[in-house]
Length: 372
Length: 101
Image (cartoon, rainbow over all chains, first blue to last red; front, side, top):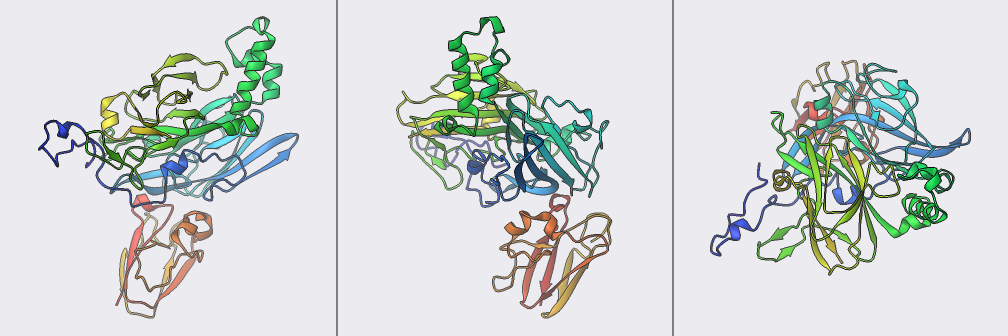
């Protein structure tokens, strides 16, 4: 595969062949940039050229409207390695949708691909016809067919969408998935604080209510407090390049080692590459990762940070953390959560993060933050 | 463009000045979209929908679709090899080549 190899170029220093792994070379296909994808949140305001979108008011609700088209496209998953994907709007992961709880998400979906597809949202959806499964509503959409899905943005959290056509394993692993982020409405949090934490209404103090509202503001992209947080989307995925029912390449956001280093001698020296480089983060800024596991074939995936512990909010559906002070979190397929990171007391430099299934890490899901 | 997601012929050789006409004989929409950088450097970019780059064509797939029964034409003036794709069916193998001599 050209990935996951030990560095065999120099055996003159004992052990140097054990100091490095990664993909050889840089990415030449620049149609998709995983460094840009981290920060691409489509709220209806035209954030991505390949995602026609609009936002407007209708019957007292904010509507966020998106056009999704499924196509059969080719994506680059490692330098020089292409994968025959099925993709929403030509990208894997699909576009990240972002709304505020209570909004209406309207997705005008057209299937242009060769196979029948749907979009199934992991949201609290009250209308079964909008569930995006073969047995309900319009069912699967054949080539050239269209349907407009409408979903109320609820509950708050980080959610998942994917094609629910059969065989499900193939439709997901080919690339038909993405993230939906639902921001809390701070006013609603103030009125119904018990829905956002693990306390009964009788236990909500004024202080807790204020804390929950403050946290909600950091999560709401329309609040100035949200600008203080560096937010990133990471969809953990894998690719079965030879269609044997097992993944050969793993990544966060499709491209193996895209958040790695360009080059290292395995002796503590490294260089950033043009396309393979660490995610630079400001040590004085709070870091938030919207983490989604889309892996197929493997039962679980994970996220592990070096030299730092984080708080985790499973599904992002609470404003108080569900795990405190952990450096590893596990997710099954479709599970997702929010990771809150803080490097403010760390020295500048490289901090690794990766799946703690060593196989996944060595085959692409190995990344770095460069704290500056 | 045929019902089994192929260009027929997949590889076509013509002389300079030839107008090539792609007719969609299938029931679903297809595009004819040149790959940037895979046509002669002096040649004009071509794509159904009259886009001026592959990126523009990919950002507006609908705008390049040739409906069932309709056609797209392009005249090749520069010798060389031209690689092109149907954007919505690329990974189903729907690519083609025109060689101009």
